[in-house]
Image (tube, rainbow, N blue to C red; front, side, top):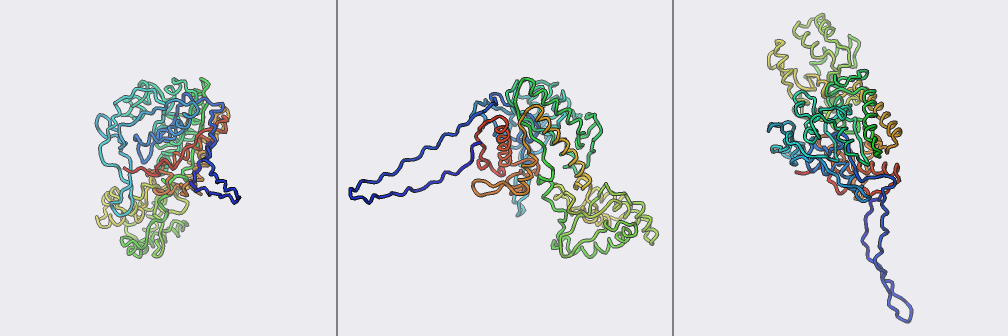
Length: 528
């Protein structure tokens, strides 16, 4: 791969001769750089297709839009391949740079995110305007970029995944509807039909990610071999994944195509799970700090119950001098609702108070550094939970008391959807490890280039990646340059770094020498 270098301008020194013949000195002319010997090696890039999900499509800032598609990872790769015989690379472009999909004129997805400084500090908001990409406007293909945002591994092999009639029952994907060759086609069928010479396959992220981003609200389907019964936030059974992945590679290589595959990153490497701290409650906040003595006094009796029940680690205490952890609901804990109620009754509490306390805190604890708080939680922490407010009033509490007990993460345990607990993280890691073992083994079996995206994104998170201009690309939300505002998908510069990792793997496997991608040619964040 061609290395990125800075050409340094310099002033040549004029060396004047000291001999008596006053022969004028000469200044050497410019040095012509040696041409880079780019080569495809043993690879054939004449017809390149890319198969995958949102990471292949160019999804960024929570949406798919034209600029993101043009800065997609496979598009960058195709530009490099073009120097060594690669052909045209087309994508099913959206209609605008807003990113919102419509179905029969009604909004189906939201617009992309941008940074706003309206409140004095940066915050992500959706771009204003009405998206003009109508799902029913079917595009004429075929297309080289077959990335389908939201697709899981088994979706790529599902017939009818592009049938507009299936959208109402969740059997189809609106992005694929736009460019499926025909309603009953599958993504892998459309890929195989193109008889490509080279392919990329990066799939499996969504088989895990939906569970993780929902705070473990789905089901770990380990042991369930029927993906038609899975929910959108479930973890795919690793044996199902292995079978499907093998089938995808079998089809993609059936015509002799070469290719590159990549494994899946650990969720803890992306800012969606690393931005909001487990202890975000600031005692200097005038809306929270003055309430701490009252809160601690209110929780004292409950903490005594926890001590009596042998679970003192569940005690809820807020600090007056340091940031405090959130009060959360941990569904992996034994539910002590009934026991809490009985102990309080035995100690003289009225029936209503005892019942409500048991109801609220049966699986409550404060968060720890081992918990991952999801990015969207920042909009609900320390706000009134309207559903809880109504429920508590339904239990007989007056509005004032119900409001005091319905503050998310303070008096009302932050719900499961906002926290990925250690137990849930373990399920995600177990699946990720097994998926990655499958991907690497099958890359070897089918003699393909392999990208360890997991290891690379860990480097981005841990150390950052230095750039030629002295900057460092990191996974820090909003400012690191590696990830977009949705906290999951790379920013354009992050995609460029990943593209170079793919090119390196291809070079190593096929003896190629390819032009690299200059990350500095791509922005760290889009600006409207």
